[in-house]
Image 1 (cartoon, rainbow, N blue to C red):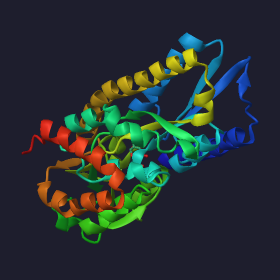
Image 2: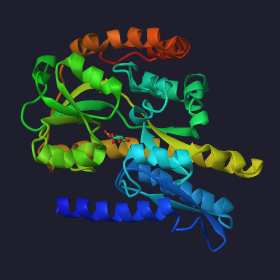
Image 3: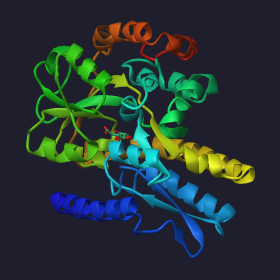
Image 4: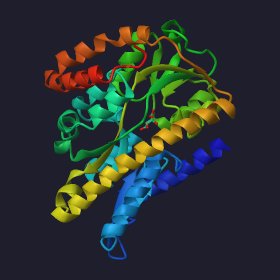
Length: 343
Ligand code: GCU
């Protein structure tokens, strides 16, 4: 059944993509300009709920002029495809993981560092601070897109089909899917696993056919993406808090009249706010479903050894990109203010 859904989604996706790329769908409907937003989550996911709230908000304020259309489930392609479509203006917005953006601007590498944030509070405070995100969010303007808000994607942890990860040694030799980012590949190398980068949409089949032994993600991947049907061991090693980023085409944003731009900015804040509220509820539900319906076991390994192995990545990055140091130091201040509860 899952495979049928995936095939159907792929066929629909190709059709949608062709319509968008060739412009056959048109950019106007009933005299309103169509605004296309793509993402890779299902319709029950906080990201989709937040973007639907954005759609409703823009409709209530500027509905005579704009018609927002939200395309979930990779209907407009993988995140990498969607970033490129946003860059060229074939679509107006998309949600991409910060990991993917690392290949478009080195600055994004910072938020992909393992154990960058000491706690969820430190993570949220950093991402809410314009001094932290400003220089990074604007760094792709020349490439044609900019970040307009961030979206919480929780904490990433390892999960596996057969062997639970209770210590770093358990990762040895395991093929683990990671996102397509050099930082994630390096992290897996240090931890002793074998990194297998692939797009999110391919992970379920790769797990099911045992092409990979496991993956790493937040709890929603177990339920909303069905990975918990195959992987019965989820270990809270807490290696990354990687935000998702809503990016927009610069030409579209820059051409908005001032008053309309202000309304869009209000809309971006709604995306952030609604998603964060929904996220807390969704993760609780996902944990409950994974444990009680899918039979997933949760493990709580000592995170210190994982952290120590990954620690050299921080200094290495700062040496390579010294401009990121003031931002890193700001994050460290939040880490001191909101330390890990485990300490
Ligand atoms: C999370 C994240 C997505 C990302 C996915 C992945 O679900 O929210 O943006 O694509 O992880 O691992 O690829």
